[in-house]
Length: 317
Ligand SMILES: Nc1nc2c(ncn2[C@@H]2O[C@H](COP(=O)(O)OP(=O)(O)OP(=O)(O)O)[C@@H](O)[C@H]2O)c(=O)[nH]1
Ligand SMILES: [Mg+2]
Image 1 (cartoon, rainbow, N blue to C red):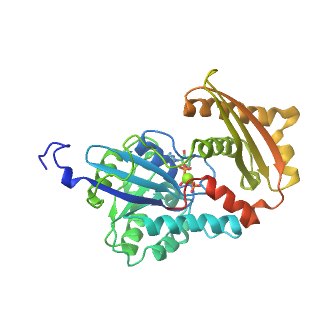
Image 2: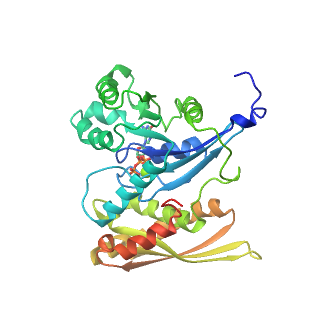
Image 3: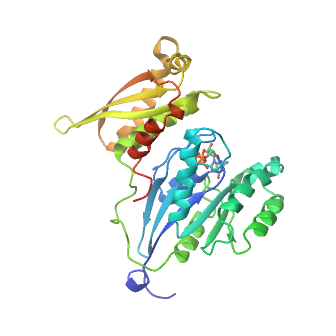
């Protein structure tokens, strides 16, 4: 259209977009890249995101309210169940479904294609809403025809879907993808103030940053037995200082030593990496105290999982 961006107030668009897909596909990386700001944590490990995390993009034409979601995988246990619920809730709430898939994975492992796409196929089969499929990580291979099995299967499962290959990491295709998403949103006014970037509290974001550093430094199953809760947050405007006390909960006594590391070196490193990033988040000096507590089998404790969920600011209205 030839209208200037601000002239078409009646055409302003606003809607909710669920970013869904298998673990490790790059959903969170994509959200941060689309917003140009970090609202959700990213690690090379699957099952990094545990909650619905809302990230809001606003420009002169539209407001896109993205919901980052945990990766969809068939795993057992209550934590996985609560993660799956976050996906369903986001899918139910969405005006547009944006499926993110790791295009490089299915080139290396074609056998995973059915495992990953079948549950997604069931989740949004017969859906009338716009569906956009973003095969991601195209920076990792030069010959784009290698995506053909993925594109063919995706087309079979969702014949109406628009397929748009991208690289969330290099930024390839993201401007066009954002324009496509905007064009598929319902017409309506913005639902959030234009400077609001997320619904998550600073407390939750700080806890997530700490969890990200834990995920990056821990190995094997240990990160999956770790949760972070910010217990106190005090601002001292005179000294420009924020004092944060956070607890790292571990599901097994043996994990505690692994988090703390030799002579406290592990926890020290996590603390200083997290502090640096939280400092940017709050825009001032930060004093961060970390404690490690054993809370056996917290991943199976519904009350504790609910507490963590509530602190995320996610979970819908
Ligand atoms: N090369 C490459 N790597 C990417 C791209 N997008 C994401 N990654 C990497 O893929 C890994 C997983 O990224 P995340 O954004 O955490 O993936 P996710 O889908 O949110 O994962 P879960 O939260 O576990 O479901 C990280 O190591 C990212 O750096 C991409 O476009 N290219
Ligand atoms: Mg994620």
